Amino acid sequence: MRSREKAFNWLFWSLAMGVVLTGQTGAAEDIRVGTWKTAQTIQPFLYQDFFSGGAAISVFPFTNPADQKTALLAGSLDICGTTLAHAIHSASMGQPVVVVAALCNKCSALVVKKDGPIQQIKDLKGKRIGYVPGTMHEILLRETLKQNGLSADKDVQLMRVDFFDMGTALANGDIDAFLSGEPFPTIAVHNDYGRILSYPYYDESVGTINAGMLVTREMIEKDPERVYRLVAAHAQATEYLRANPDKWLQRAAEFGTPVEILREAAPNMELAWLVDEAYVARAKALGTRMQALGIIAKQPDYEKLFDLSFVKKVQEQRGKTP
Image (cartoon, rainbow, N blue to C red):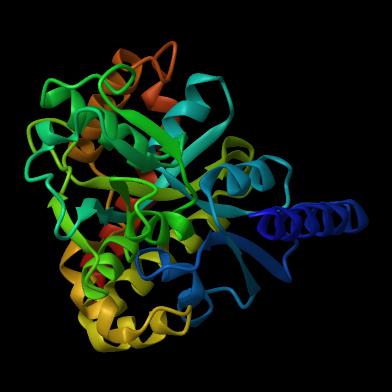
């Protein structure tokens, strides 16, 4: 974990120094994009193939949305990935962030020991559950427990475990369950020590929304054309990968997860770009749950947090394409 933190510190300060030396953010010759190295957040790695305008696009991998957002607000990135939970949390604190496209849906699962005694959510009472605080997965975990009559603070022991270490912790008996994103749940099943207990999606409220693409309000005001071109590239990359699932998973396997595991995980991963009124309504439902769970103190201004104009323009242009 410490090595990843050192890597981020080096990346953050080198990017920040680049901004200082050039005297501007997102110079015409270079666009900087942040994302994760996962199958469900892969689209930015294809932006260069679809971006119109001739600028060079550099993609920087991160391990969490908070670091991406920090680099974005510092001017070191032009656009980055974010979980919807983190975007809502940031906006509730008044930070000038704007979601301009979806990134992925679904991708989460609650995992227990394959041959363990836990057969339903209520069996988690008194058990140790691995999670990462401040993530979408924490919200889903707390909501899952609440809907099954369990208190996250009194009935279970929540243990902070890095995503990369959850499988080992479960296999070794250090935790009894974990909730995380793909491919870790599928890896646990594939390696025969884990079993999916639940896919924590609630269609009546939050649904399957997960992550989106984030820019600053300043960038929208100063260079809306660049934002549009990035959203257009994102939409094209998403549609290309959805139309070519084998190429999607083969490319994602370059990040280190075997392609056979990605194929098993694929039904629980959904690449996305479209944001509409229904999507925003689900985000509002998520924000309501976050406030009820005490994760945020107040609701953000959703009119400022979401800008649907770029996605709508992409839809219009796609409709005009023969």
